[in-house]
Length: 233
Image (tube, rainbow, N blue to C red; front, side, top):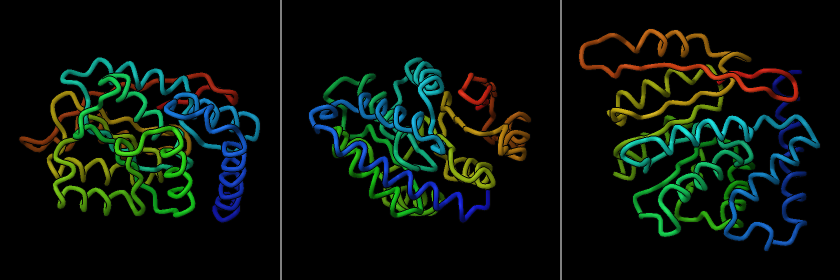
């Protein structure tokens, strides 16, 4: 399927998702981001053509975040799409820190598509994650540079790459250049097998650039069973 046709399908699905969610009683999702994330996955399972980060993968990611010490405070997401994973990251941070989440605990999710940004902002508001999950419109690299310049992001505990695979490596290296990683930070990339991100994989599997003082990576590939077969990330 050509890219423009695929984008048209995604846009149609996003509007259908909006109608599906907001036709239900708001009380189903108030202060309950996990319920909203589950509803998005239910819709995706019924409609198809929704490239979301599904529950089995989220469970693996949550296990890694819960194990972090010190506890994670800043998560970056490159590629918002319909907001399912952004809601989940916010829910995870709230589970880790409790209902009174400190002000310096934040999720920043980046997407250049105004339709997806508007939808996700509405979903964030619906489930009570305002002030914790911030949906930023624009390319991830530009958004991150601006947040750093404004002093809003000074370190990163986890970065999630789920946008155009050709940008995975450059965005990872931008985080390095901005000196945002700490020891124990997590970099999670989806769809590394298909459509694939060979340059990203080669870089992290080699441990990074190899330059003295550079970030050193340890890698682990995980395969989960989906409805269409195994998927790696």
